[in-house]
Image (cartoon, rainbow, N blue to C red; front, side, top):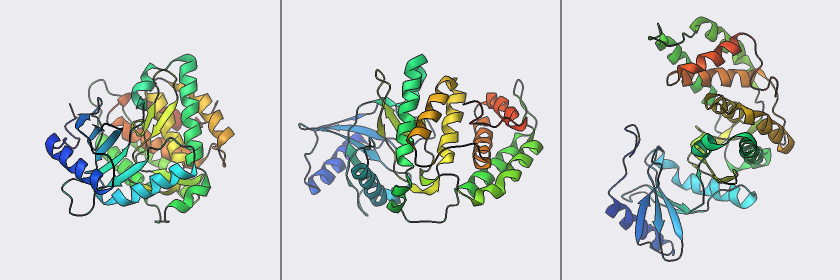
Length: 313
């Protein structure tokens, strides 16, 4: 069952036909069956295609379909240049095709968000360290040449989106913690000038989150980096602050110190406390408040002067 806000899965007979047409055109073995992935909570529908020789992953890239050629090129270039667990992108649809398909290598694992829920103690630390290793590699500035400099714009979008949420909060509903909108605006505005400098110049993936990784539910290692629709140049500190927020929201901060230590041991540029990190963490916390008012406690800590996410790590 797909969430109502997600793109619906196309007719499977049509999907099988279009998948095989694309495979045959590119000299690849065709498949005889399709199976939707067990977790359908993704923006673009995904199925596993079975042939007699291998399994493929087929993504119906309805959102950002115009990026198909770009994501294939970037994902394969990074896969060839690194040891990152990026699936080989075999082929993609062309203009005029009935479905905007991307056909990729199948990789083992489950979504990181589901594996994280089961991780405790040493398993949690192992998982967080594996995630940090991937991000540190991805953030290596040598990879910046893989994409053109488009001039950014993400921080401006995030600022506008956060201000919009603050305007809509109004009086809290029954049982909801209230946000001090005026104090939050002052906090965010005070950190805007710092964004003129990039804390960690690196590649970034738009909306990179726990759904963008696969993990082994027994070994607690990252087994796949997914979703290459929008890769640009940006500030790697944003991805790091988002990981902190996700660990906070899921009650998994016991893994944060291992994530942070591993990242800085592996990274070309150290992640350190900075006003850019505070800006991104506050903005993302404000956005999270729309769905989880418990994040108000994290907002309060930031307003109280806690130097998160790196304080005490």
